Image (cartoon, rainbow, N blue to C red):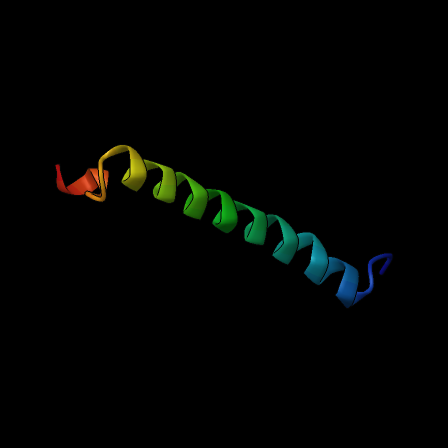
Amino acid sequence: NTYNEKQLEAAIVEPKRALIEEGREAIKANIERNEGIPYETK
């Protein structure tokens, strides 16, 4: 087993966290663009 569990965990958790952050930023930008109305409700 070349990977120890901490490395494996970081390899999975870090990209996921980055994706979640990106998603939040995108949602925030959409809300601002639509004057506070999330684009799904339009």
